[in-house]
Length: 406
Ligand code: ADP
Image (tube, rainbow, N blue to C red; front, side, top):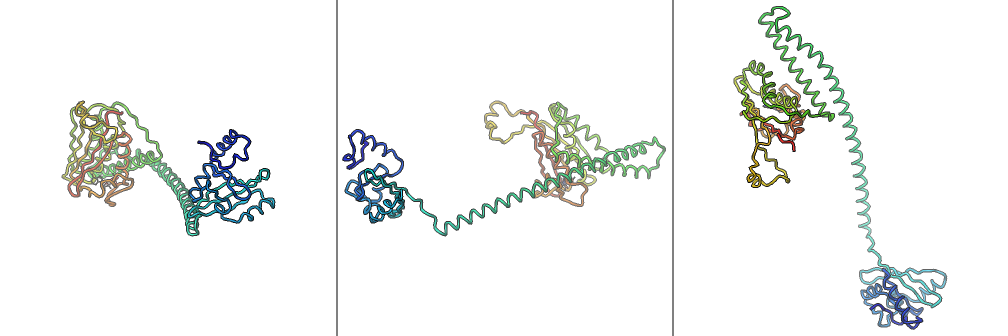
């Protein structure tokens, strides 16, 4: 049923063309009404009928445009149109709905064409005020964000410059320290002449202080290299046994002098796998250094290493039943643990100590960088490092290195 006209057929030349025009007007996406100048409705399209229904006006029951729809005197509208205005806009209110009626005059057939436009509820003064306040707040927030970002970038640049300056200062220290260390070794070897017991002790102590300085400097250089994103792993197929024995060999003397027993327990089936030899040595050295520093004379430090099955908790991992069925519990990593009988660390510091410049006991020597560097190096290998410790009962630092690089 396409035709919705009432008396428009009186004006149309043929029924067919009338139906065509009507269906075209029905397809319009806005309400359209046509009346004669007395307000008698000649045509309402489908949209208009819907609106009139909601305004409780029946277009088929001789409804009048002026009295029933526009609720105004027809002379008011007609006089404006006849005075030359092409369109008269007239507000209509029905219950909560508001419309604007746009009335045009077609002189030739002397018809009035009316479009109805719903008016969106206007914001009340409170709402408008609130909208403005929200807008102002958003603007303020954006300015604050921008200022914060600018300040952050400035600080970052200052920080970078400071790191670069300290790194170059540390670099300058390396050569004189190496020279000093070389002379201590030469003197201690006796090749420059015989030295007495007292002189040997003093030289030995000076050499150890020099070694500590060398470690601090290299620690800082490593840190600044990490900071400036210069960490590049030299991943090669290496033997962890060699790597560990090499470094512990260098620490034996220091442990002996401190009267702390150093025990190495490496599993006979340590597999060869890809890792950065120097960097892993550095991690082991940092853990040994800490263990020695915090373990009193008479105590012991144990370094253990062996294959391990690491069940990574990722969403992509196969369920454990599946892995068990496929015999998947083969070692996929190596676990290294350095355990000491030293002072221990209270549990509230177990996370923090892996952050830069964090020292639990500020009176102890060190910059609070060793564990932070260790963590970054281990993570660069896609491994992880953690601590188990209890105050007064020693500490156990462990790291895992994956042997399969997926
Ligand atoms: P530092 O160079 O100052 O030792 P680290 O990052 O290596 O810095 O260690 C951070 C802090 O963690 C240390 O200051 C120390 O308080 C604590 N710590 C680290 N290892 C041990 C340990 N084996 N026993 C007790 N405390 C430790």
